[in-house]
Amino acid sequence: MLTNLQARDVETLVHPYTNLVAVRETGPLILERGKGVWVHDVDGKPYLEGMAGLWCTALGYGNEELVEAAATQMRKLPFTHIFGGKSHDPAIELAEKLKEMAPVPISKVFFTCSGSEANDTQMKLVWYMNNALGRPKKKKIISRMRAYHGVTIAAASLTGLAGNHNDFDLPIAGVRHTTCPHYYRLAEAGESEEDFATRLAADLEALIIAEGPETVAAFIAEPVLGAGGVIVPPKTYYPKIQAVLEKYDVFFIADEVITGFGRLGTAFGCEAMEMKPHSISVAKALSSAYQPIGGVMIPEDMYQAMLEESRKLGSFGHGYTYSAHPVAAAVAVKTLEIYERESIFERVRAKIPHFGARRAALEDHPLVGEARGAGLVAGIELVADKKSKHQFDPKLGVAAKCVAFAQEEGLIVRNVFGDAVTICPPLVISPAEIDELFDRLTRALDKTLDWAV
Ligand code: PLP
Image (cartoon, rainbow, N blue to C red):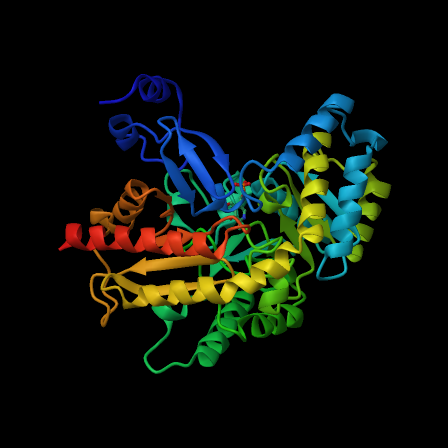
């Protein structure tokens, strides 16, 4: 029986990433407020937010400094834009700060409102650049199976999940997907991680050659794949992939929408994963999700090509009304200030061994095939048989059931792809709360086991 608020919800809202039939029966979980890593539903029940919302509320809930930063900017100038040669202080300050923090040389920043828009912009900029450079055929973009880069038409095409393509008539032309770097599932018998990485680099090279290197413009990668089930590539994977990209003059885009700003214990995931990209997409933890903002961090040579096009065409014909929205930019500036002042990334590094040990211990559970992760993000893959790695019938929805049991236990986790349960708590989680998270998850796994057998 739905509550009044739930009934009004299902009569009015289309829920993203939701079974639209099931939610009409169950009604949604309606949240009302939050503090630290905890959120409360409308009945006052507390939940540990084990997903930081959607991998984004890095500083947790109820951060008054961020609220104040937004209120102050709203009072001063709630909106102005940066089109047509206008600007404002928060945008300038934020771009300066990002340039300073960048793990690779970055010349300029273009702001968006989301991660999807950042990746769409990346694709457009690569095309724009190659037109400026007089190589109009070099336009294809290679992504990976199980990658997640967003849902706008171009970003969803880069995403390598069937659920984002089926019946949406995607992917669009010119996007290819290479092998996912998931050793647990895709390694051949007896293959070492190193050999697996070598094989995946060879797969990428074969794809570039088959397509024609003169047609391949860019490769895009999340340092650690997130929504695809939290997949951490083997250690030597990126150096090997980069060698191939360099050989064929393929631009390298890092999608740091989840890994940016401390998730892996470093400012950017690239630093933890030995990646040397040319450009970087950011969003989510850029503002700790208190305001919607994303961006593309652009290298000098790409910017020079953009200048060239502006010389030729007049205006740079791209931008969103809310690009560098002043309130969002002010909140992001404050977020970056807090990360630095409170040594948030160093404190994440100190928490990683405990989080990692609790994660790894889940592999002792009869349902868990692989408890993988890096930094403060994890993917727990549920299997019907640990030895053979045999999967459950997808129709059973085992991971979704586990997520529902976790919710009963007062823990929010997610299942986006396959039978993986994902965990990505706010970076400010305490060691005791890490224990609470894994204790609750273990109870949910026990209930799932009882239910599944
Ligand atoms: N890229 C990555 C790695 C993401 O995880 C996401 C969202 O989860 C996106 C892009 C898309 O971001 P948004 O939902 O803000 O459009």
